[in-house]
Amino acid sequence: MKKEQSKSEAKERDRILKNFLDEFFDFYTLRKVGFFPKEMKKSDIHGQAKRICQWFGFKTVFEYGVDKIRCHISYADGHSPQHVDQNGDLQQEPFITEIGGIYE
Image (cartoon, rainbow, N blue to C red; front, side, top):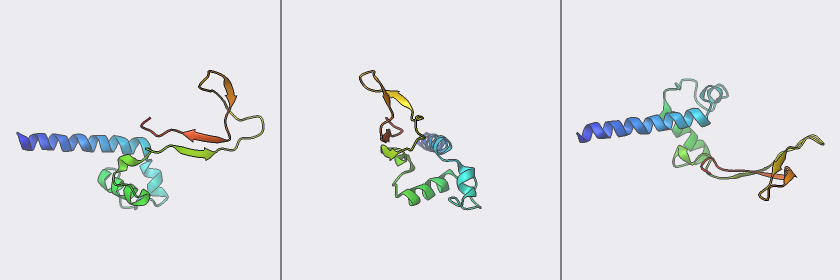
């Protein structure tokens, strides 16, 4: 009983890892540009996770996207997007854009 439960838990963890990698990392593009070795298969989800962790310095691949990102995005004159602020007023996009983490 315990062995079966442990097997099903491992299968579920692998399913979650595969879905996470599929959503946030384009395997074929990353392999094409050399991030993943040419020999690596898409089905090697643990190898992909290990490489991502090595590159970013993560303990687990699920750390990806946790932090907010602040960046400056340049727009052509008169073409910066508008957004509704916290008060419900229409505003131009600020000079520094903050993109929330994936878990927010």
